[in-house]
Amino acid sequence: MEAASVPLSLPGNSAASRDESAALAARARDGDVGAFEQLYRRHAGRVHSVCLRITADRGAAEECTQDAFVRAWDALGRFRGDSSFATWLTRIAINVALQRLKLERRHLRLVQPGDTEFIESHAAPKEAPDADMDMEKLIASLPPAARTVFVLHAVEGYSHEEIAGLTGIAAGTCKAHVHRARQLLQARLQA
Amino acid sequence: MNKPADDNLDAALAKLPRTVEPARDLWPGIAARIAAHRSRVRNGWSYGVAVAAVVVAAAAVTWSLLRPSSPGTQIVAKTTTDHGVVTKPVDMLAQFTAQMVSNTDLPPKARAALLDNLRMVNIDILHTQAALKKYPDDVNLRALLFNLYQQQAWLLNEAQQVQVQTTARTDI
Image (cartoon, rainbow over all chains, first blue to last red):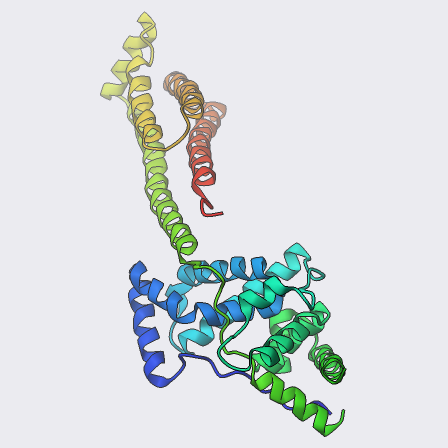
């Protein structure tokens, strides 16, 4: 049986922070680039982490992050505040990263275990760096389809139905990918 | 799947950092692309309005020339006899379109080529207008004139596209 996903809570998604982001988004919608830069400073890490985990490629993740913010700027007029800005932006980032995988067929360009450059540039050095880095590496080493679905479900907290809508694959296939990813990760964790 | 293994995995997932900051500041690239986009949108609007203005102006000239007893009629009647043909209207249209083209950031060669093409189309437009004055019911002439207006708009639009391509994605 598949274990429950443990999505990461969105940083900067408290009520106060949501209000501040919404206010900045409103200013940015009126053409205030400075306000949009503040939104970038608040949410770049979040957007980049999603892009990095989906693409498993540092350069691609940076380009996707830029693309996501540019797209968000273009789409600010359609941001109504039904969800938080962070949630809305993350959704854009996911779409950008998925589109990149589809268009460029870079599915096999994975970060390999032992890629010290990747480790050094993406580690979270403040707490339990080894454990975190290992898990990042393990996720990055998953087969692309399984990795994408696993990241969306187990890390980002999307339901199988939502992932089906995002990726265009059946919900049942999503479940199979997550199951496979969990098996692979458990096997590698125990190794 | 066994429970302890699941728990271990979930515990490891829970430790994943919420954010992973990019290795470099990506904002300058984003800001440049936003600025380029804003510029394109602004230019696109003004250029679109200008293209529409040219077409409307050309159509207005046609209407004034074809209208009985209009000053335009005199111009054409006069110019068709002394080879000054269409000189004034051509100059008028040429000046108008040249002003539009000069407002673009096109390379000099492209701008010169565009102006040459526009000049030829403008001359054809005026000749066709003169012919229509003589044969106002000629359907083919009307179709030709319409086609020439389309060419004129197409040329101006192409100029805009070239400009967009040369200004886009300067950050990468």
